Image 1 (tube, rainbow over the protein chains, first blue to last red):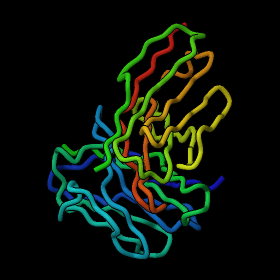
Image 2 (cartoon, each protein chain N blue to C red):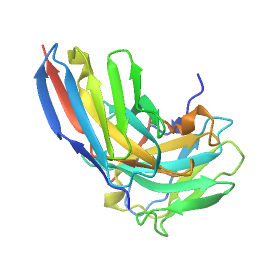
Image 3 (tube, each protein chain N blue to C red):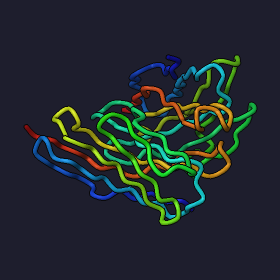
Image 4 (cartoon, rainbow over the protein chains, first blue to last red):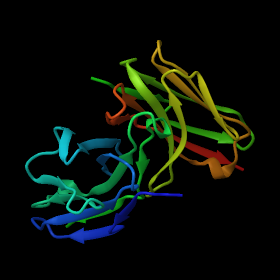
Length: 116
Length: 113
């Protein structure tokens, strides 16, 4: 069964460093998302991406964050200068075109980011 | 702005009980609703997906209902087992079919032998 894959599963970084989290969405999906979950808190929407551009972003997704689909298969989230409060689990998700699979979002296993 | 609330926040029950977890949402213009399971420190496992036009979905011991007009969904777990212990998340997707999912804070379930 196709699945969304994320790497790395866990990354530890120093405050101020750049981090890139990678995702490979399911191959025929068109909509891509990043979410984050700070320990003990809700899963929060960060950004959605469609047709090679951001379709929506939350207040959390400030200038420190960027997304890219560099090669038609990978979908990346970059944090330019990490802060302690960026420590969280980051989830990638993808969704097929409307009408397929009931519009279900499929999630990866997550990348745990720890900022020291 | 869509808001999703889940009640109760935590639940502890003996094995074998039938359970009802509640989810409410403020904007009834939804495309679908998903229920997820999350084990501590782990990812999101999709349990059930209900389209806005549907009333319920079933998978094994799980049954989810949707009343879109009143902004409510319930997840029914029959004959609970210790292996059901996890956090259960409800999430709604806005109408349009490509919109984001908005999550509730979850119900933390503990089933003891």
